[in-house]
Length: 187
Image (tube, rainbow, N blue to C red; front, side, top):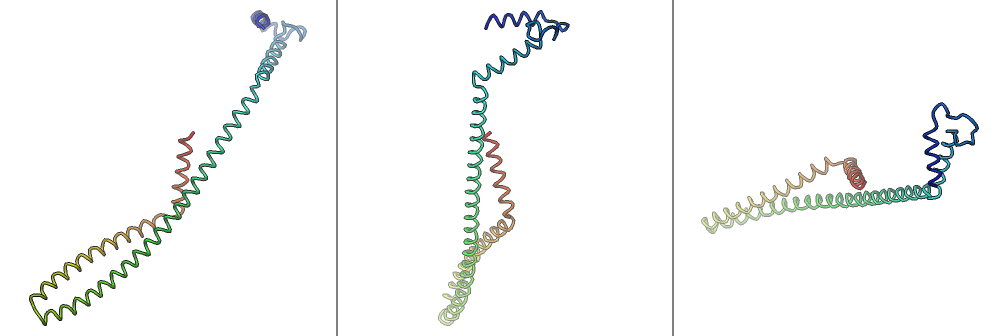
């Protein structure tokens, strides 16, 4: 091998462009023949060391890795859609519960107001001083109840505004952006 390399190097150095492709083809002085031998030797070395099968194996492994990452991304997307649907159901349930609480609070407030009137009339008849104390207590309770109700209504309104602004397309867009970001960070 060393002799062949030395002979090829000497022949390559002694060959000039004027001598290129002159004479018989099967001669070490013919550059076309030397180039053909070098190419055949190069291909034979590649075949001997099984480079094409190694490259094919590496490409197949990379394709399998990419496929598994895509499958994982699909699974994550499906899981995210399931979680989103769950949260949407919970949001609807919470809105319904908030509406029931508001309605119940209104009926309780009305009942409390009616009872306060009855108690007030009875108390006025018995004692004027005790009635003033009860009125002050009822007013404080009503103010607290109204404040609590205002907080519940404000929270419900905020939920409604957020749920009306977020569409399914936007939610899917956020999911796709998350998958793209995960894919970019994994490569």
